[in-house]
Image (tube, rainbow, N blue to C red; front, side, top):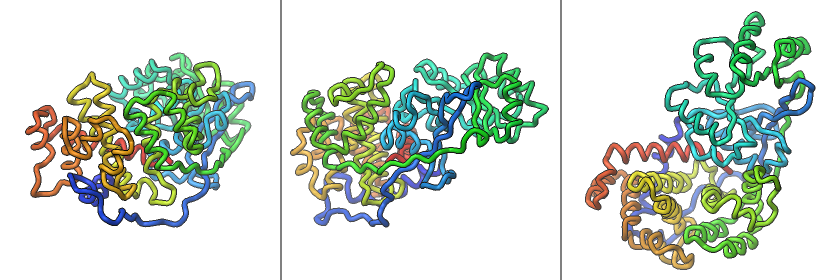
Length: 451
């Protein structure tokens, strides 16, 4: 992925305005305005049928606009947008009904948090043909399958040793009928069936292809012979930053459910996004969740916090996510702090969550054009988060100083590793910090398409 490099470069341009003890500029940060953002979001879906011709599933496809073809320059971003639009923009029930959705996914996203925003019983992870299998990936696929996900191999066109070696770690195989030699199909189909895997014929464009696939025992079918992809459209849902900020503040201090419910009821746009998220996660309960109280309990505050954080900086009037340096800095900073906290205390989930929230709230004064104290004192945050941002005190304040130093990369001030060593965080060596910086940038890059 090339995205992490641009993240670091753009984030550094903003870091000087928002890091350290300095207050926000007297004039609020003004970010360039683009032409009005499209009022709609788009998503493609193509039916996958069974042998009787009944609908079995959909493949979900990235669409940048109403035109029915893909414009994908970054696989990870395209997948992130497909997931975000299915869950938060249009809604799983509207997109999939009671069927499953196949989502193309590359190696980076297989290891990313975004996978767990998808309900395992509703989404099939369709591994791109560009993904190289190794021991680490095999272990990850085993984890995801234990969590309930099904894994499909995409665009298979030949019977190879590589295919046979990865079949034990998958559930389905999609054979590309456009490129697979007809003479090779019988042996390929037989090998997949012998391994006990579901066999899918994709890119079936003629009656003859369908007849051949049926004769060879294929289980599922997809292609222009049956249906071209349909483009779904929904109004873009822009959420209030102030409302998201209040919601995150409540989550950060472990507010009671009644407080969360009251806050959500005051903000219909946020409710729409979050109810879609929690309803998509709740099919395993055997009912569709309708009340906010049920939604909060079923999904969990941690999942809601992750989703709200991704929405916080996505104001429809500003730059797109991938181009907005403040968004880039907020996303990488919060993830960096969480990774550092986990490295220092691997078993302390509360410490990691507090670090993540500290990263989020460390920049909201820039969004609102105020000082850190003026913004945070109104929110009732946990003292360790408030004091870390306003006074740079405590362990959390030290982590914030470390990430600020990593953001700036300027001379004349201690670097991140020096701050860590002076604070007794010897585990955060220069090599570890460098790896965390890259991991945080990659995490943001994978999520940068969420809208």
